[in-house]
Amino acid sequence: MSTNTWNRQRVAKIAIPIAAWLVGIIFVIPILYMVLTSLHAPHDAQTYPPSWGAPLTLDNYSGLFTSANPITPALINSVITSVISTLLVLALAIPAAYALAIRPVKRWSDAMFFFLSTKMLPMVAGILPIYLFTTQVIKMPDNVIVLILLYTAMNLPIAVWMMRSFLAEVPPAIIEAASIDGASTMRILTRIVAPISMPGVAATSLICFIFAWNEQLYAKVLTSVAAQTGPVFVNTLIQTEHAYLAELAAGATLISLPVLIAGFAAQDKLVQGLSLGAVK
Amino acid sequence: MASVTAPAPTTVEPVATRPPEEYKKWGRESWKLRAPLMPALVFLIVVTQLPFVATLVMSFMDWSAQPDAEGRSFAGFDNFKTVFTTPAYRSAVLNTIEMTVVIVGVSALLALGIALLLNHAFIGRGVVRTMMIAPFLIVPIAAAVFWGNGILMTGFGLVDGVLGQLGVPGAQDIAFLTDHPKLAIEIELIWQWTPFMMLILLAGLQSQDPEVLEAASIDGCNSWQTFVHMTLPHVRRYLELSIVLGTIFIVQNFDTVLGMTGGLNSTNIPYAVYETFYSAKDYGVASALGVVVVIGSLIVATFALRVVSSLLTDEEAAR
Image (cartoon, rainbow over all chains, first blue to last red; front, side, top):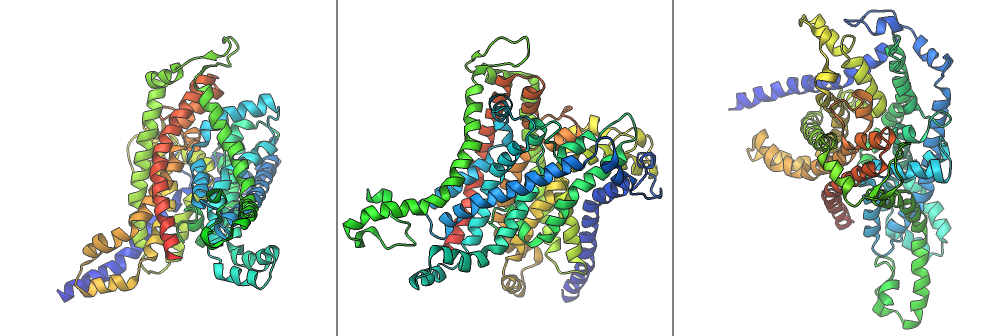
């Protein structure tokens, strides 16, 4: 019995790391192959079988910026829509979270579930009225302002949930004590609440930035040229009349880089954000 | 009056202990409490709820934007009848259900297995965890177009190439995207969403008290018994959470269908809505499809809200 357990423990000690590494490698292979393809010359990138040892080049990346139809305007639009919508989300979500966590309104949990329920309705179900409204009523087709407002609404429920869970960690006793000592609401906010919730604001911003950066359905339907974003641009790189795969891989890698960096930087906060603050 | 103006229980003592002349002050006070919430609430109602109302109205209208179409008129339930009797729309509904169930089910099982592996200490655990997260951090449409063109494409795709190098005859002509479009989409989405679920499950596993597990092993439980009777009940709600959140996102998926198959034999409802209004310009039927997906989502959301609510109640109890 004891040798049996000992053996099993030894097998587990070797088998678990091997299995884990194997799974990790399988999951990362498509990404590595995408990067490798993006570094191959166009005619080396789409051969049968793959030209593993072909020379590496950065030409596909520089080509994205120097071609007749460069990626730069789309990247600028993506940065503008993601950053401004994230700032707007914070401006709306932080006061709301304050009213839900620190000095909770009556029936605050009903308000929380209203926010959550809007997130559960598929975006596609409201897209037709939004399309008709922007193109025919306010006549603002192909406009980044429309995307900014839509992304703000798309991320607001997530941000309210996240910020509430962060603000709920501020001990009520501290605020009570400060308020008894005569501190104003403003002072309580800037001196007590803000420092404690700063990491939460950072995590919320990252999640909202990632979702806005990734969004493609609204961007595709509501923009054409002037307001086109990175994800919509990548789709236009599929030009089957010539060898397109290398440039497509470069575009796909390039627009994923900000998300990869933001996600790895916020690894610990990622779970909390993705679970709407439910998992600590 | 008192019930409307009664302040939040955590900040002010109960109503009964206050003199009546203060009721008026409370009215102002409670609006002061509510004020910071209002901008977010109003903004969200205007931008997300009004369009749904408009979709609902349009779903009962005969409204086509084709140049030769007649004017708008009331259509009753005709659009819904079209959705459920036209084979293409019916298959979109069925595809959505089938793909969501397969993707969420397989992802959840894989995620649980991988989370259990990563819950052990071993050399390079941090590196493996980082590698596992990476698929979730690729822009969805970028991942979809590369899977469609670089990995599963007939001939120059990675899979055909590797199978060919392994000596599989005719590997160059294997056409995953056209022969098994749904499977191709399922594989890609499982690849993207397993990491998401794994992260939530790993957080759940790591919140388990190690002393409890140690006690179980001292009491002679084998690892299977410990898993079934201690670990599984503990991670159950994390599993539920990852399943409902994954379902919400996967039901809405549009990018993967567009990027990989362009809807060929794999149209789901979001893609069908897009095609019906963007290409076919049948606004009435597109709206009816939108209403159908909302009803489906509401059913999922009911479960979702229950799961999230139980986590929230726990948090309240812990405070």
